Length: 74
Picture 1: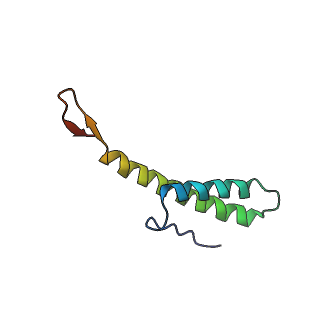
Picture 2: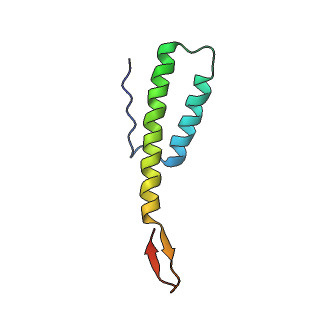
């Protein structure tokens, strides 16, 4: 079994989503073995974790304008 290694610094969020889309297409294929399916599932879960982490960091950086016209962190 191959080890899944998703490096956060290597992929942008868009690249991670594209890779997830590619994995979903592969998993939908009838030509894939059970072992390959499991490996792709593990890679997909690692990519989802990466995406969630990146989105969380962006959300924490978003500033909202309050009623007084000042900015507050989201």
